[in-house]
Amino acid sequence: MKEFINKLLTGMSIGIVVSLIPNALVGELLKLLIPYFPALQQILDISVLVMSMLPIMIGVTVGMTFKLTPIQTASIGLAAVVGSGVVQINESVMTLQGIGVVLNTGVTAGLAVLFVKYIGAKLKDYTILLLPTLSIFIPGLFGYLILPYVKSGTGIIGVGIQQVTDFQPILMGAIIAVIFCVLILSPLSTVGVATVIMLSGIGAGAANLGIVSAGIGLCIASYKSNSLGTALAHVLGSPKIQMRNFFMKPKIAFPMLITAAILGALAGVLNVQGTSMSAGFGLSGLIGPLNYINLTPDGWTTSNITVMIAMFFVIPTVLNVILLRIFSTNLKMIKSEDYKIHIE
Image 1 (cartoon, rainbow, N blue to C red):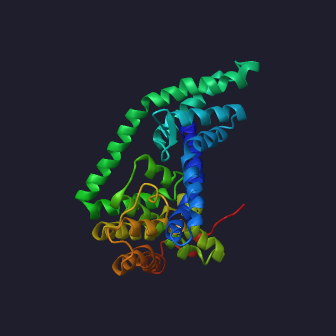
Image 2: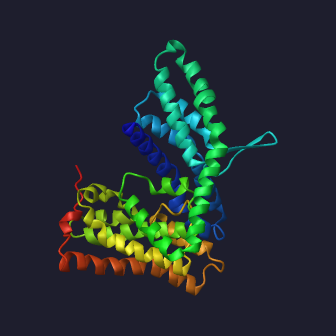
Image 3: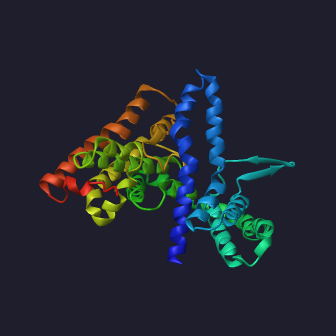
């Protein structure tokens, strides 16, 4: 069971990142440029369309993770779409809306994996005819039937987190930032977690700042032991490239975790907000900073720009530099070699 869940989560994480990262990288920048270059609207529309392909992408990547046949993999993709809720039917018109309910998509994909594995080669020459149909009407339909309950449950979790955060924004901001700082260094997808629990508001802003803390801190900590390009990959790409080193020596993340806690608390003080789509990304595509500006009531004011630059760039850099020096020079708990990336 542990191996099954691990493979399912791995497949979901890959599908989530592949589907969401194009819009994450260019979406917010395009929104700024479209008023001046209207032709860019088509590119933005394409990136949004790709986001709605998330359910089928999760099904396909889950099938590939389990090393299933092409027919089995495609069948899981179809079942995942049925159970995701991404397709809305209104007066005989079908539309794609958002990305669906990610948790239910994963549940449906997992059930579909069990189903196609159970069927195996039993259908023989009729596999290509019957397996996709059966996958739609058995695990797919089951996922569709439980969708309202799962959607309601995930909504309650998201609302609960938001209400607690609104009640205790400083404390919850710090906790959420630290959690996401750890998650970005684990095999779990921060984007997946944020979208599953529908994280929003200050909680989403704090989560993003937790990832920013990890990215900037690890970039600074690792540049002596790695190339400049590898160091920058922690910010421009993902801090997950330090996952192996983190599991071998968790103490290497202490400076980043403290930075995350401080930034998360400041997010509560300064009302730094985000969305479930921005929470799982750090500085990739500048989605965190730009979402903060877009969610402020007065937009691109001098004070908002100052807060954005300070929270997403200046403060995490300064705090990490100070804390890395304390932990390496004064406490002698870490050294630059601990951050060496081993590429085999």
